[in-house]
Image (cartoon, rainbow, N blue to C red; front, side, top):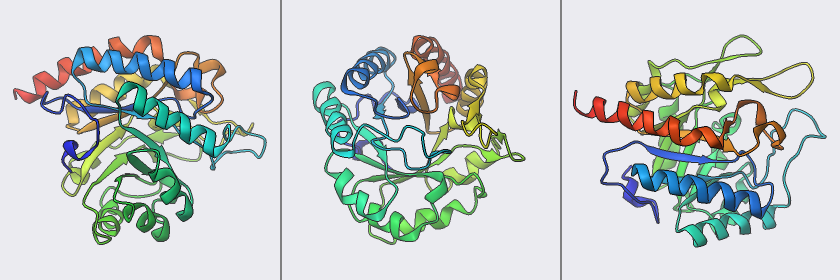
Length: 272
């Protein structure tokens, strides 16, 4: 997939990795605008192509009392405002086939969650919107098997597709990243590494997913060294009080230092 097929994306001639980053969920307009402003400024300085990420609803929560969103329409309108105000492309995830046409009116990239990537009707509905499609690799799937999810998109007449590795289940309550899968998936689609979800510790007895954010730099650096095309990082100015995935999100204050180091690694890799 050519990055230039994503509306509003900048710095595509920088030979850098691209970044999908933002909060796990849209909690309100002020927080979304603040995070978008900070990340946009950082990525402009470092010449990193940037897509703002935010879920307009969270359908796959561990418990019925977990935060699921502020209202679909309200959150989608916030995503549109972020895009218009900062001239940025946006990405959000969808969970049902009917969501595809609705979300496509507000965002540039539709993301299929890892748990749902084998749902043919959902993948095809997303593909038929003509939007760029980001397929999250199921925690239960091999890198090789993702070629079939990609083919569902392309056979639906849409060649704007990428795949994202978000780790593989390691026992019941941990994740591991198998970097051998990066070149495999790159052979059939643009490939992204979801750094923060790869560090989740799911299925905790309390019903709240844990995480290991102290390993974000390690996983991100390894991903760039392995040759990923892009990175996916959830970030928040107050992870401890975020309404979703706070345990594995990156503190926004640490983002620029991390990205600057990754850009340096990418420059080295480009010259090898």
